[in-house]
Length: 431
Picture 1: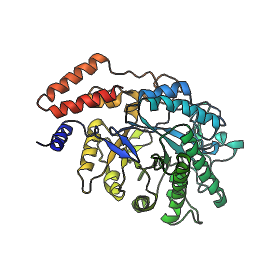
Picture 2: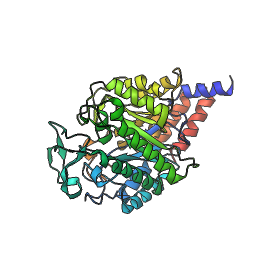
Picture 3: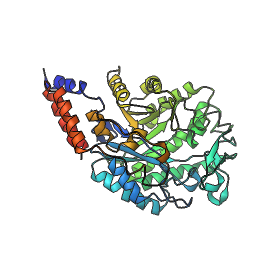
Picture 4: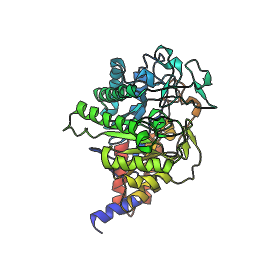
């Protein structure tokens, strides 16, 4: 058996998640990604929103592994972009300086760190907006029959947003550009444009929320215009910040949620809409990756854990670059998805993002490698604003690591390559 065959045999006995993947010019050591997760631990004032350095630096560094990819929580590009209590920003020097202190320990552990750039659009309230103005959106269409959280803990109906004038849109694109440059100053390896979950870019995409009759509404091409203006603006700003010859220059990804209904998203032809978007992303904008949210998940709710990764299979093939798939995954289903994708024709490079299980298990990649039990998550602490449920989640003990390692070594006793693979990743993930 040749070296390649031995390596393939070793990997077939272990999770396909523990194979390398290249995103941009970053060489990921494994395919388990920390999903961007809103945790609401930043300072409360809408005009401040400084991330909590003490808590967030510990939280992210706990989940950092050498060569692993972490995507930080959705981070507002301006005060106008806010929509929830205590979510962080990246539009001021003070916020940027705080993020720099959070990034440092993550990078010291050898992990890669991206920041997600966010504008919620109509998913906001005037109490968060500058001078108490109405939230903005592509059209004056409110989210019906739902409540939005305020800073005092109460929940109220969504307000009717103000439709953006066409001449205001370049300023929002510029806010995205500035946020990308601030992310570089904070030390991030890249940025991800949040274009899913019913937030501003998603609102422009869908004809259920976009009723415009100008160049940003009507046809699919027009409704997609804002997405591509933002993405290409962020790509240009990021490349300017890092330098066009830098190996980091291509590190701009985008998150999309085809067929998602969170925040009342709807479209008269969703399939055609996203076929256009994926095809154009592949042909022109070429992001470092596309991050897909499978529709089996709506916001923080898993609708069907047994549903297949249909969007990845139907739309992922339209994009030749790497894809991060998210939404209701378990280690076993993630392994199957990666394995099936690498064996498809043509092969597709896929990583899998985990959210709730990564919250409860800071050493999640090691647990997956060793097939160790997972801590259950506690939804009540997701947005508590405290260390509880954030930095206090238990790690595997040395005894448990030892016993599971020995069990796998016994399983692989006749396969030296599998044992070598296990030892290599065990050392990597315990750093």
